Length: 141
Image (cartoon, rainbow, N blue to C red; front, side, top):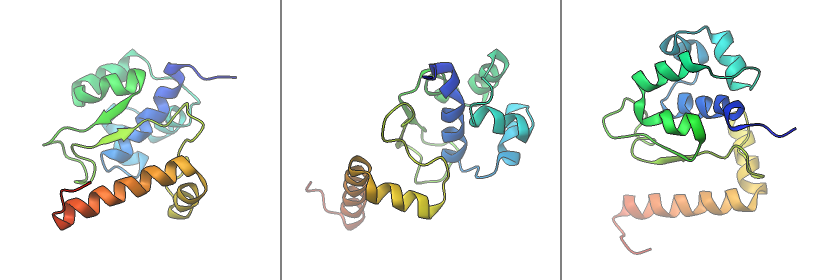
C-alpha cells in the first residue's frame, strides 16, 4: 500500500531531527511537546502528524514547515543551531523514491547503500568532489 504525503511526514520529521543534530529522540521530543515514544511512532510511520505538531514546527522552525508538510529539499538557513555541515545545504528528501537511504544511520549500512546503489554512489562522489574542491580552493568543476 502506497503511503500518502501526510504519512511520510514522519520520515521527514526524522530527517529534520537528524539534520539539526539531535541523534536521540529523547533530546528532540520535548521541543515538539511530545514523548520520545510518540516521536518514535511518528518517525516510524505508526502515526501521523496532526495540527498541533505542525503548529509547534511552524513556531520553532518556520523554514522547515513546507518540507515537513509536502517534501522537497530541507534547507537549513544560516544562523540556525545545527551541525555546520548541514547549515545552508539542501538535505534531500529521499522518501518515496526507489533509492531511499537506509532507515538507520549506522555507518556500515550507509556505506553499503553508497556502494551498491549507483545513483546514491554517484551523488556521494559528486558531493565529495565539491567538498574537496572547496577545501582546496579549486574553483574549477
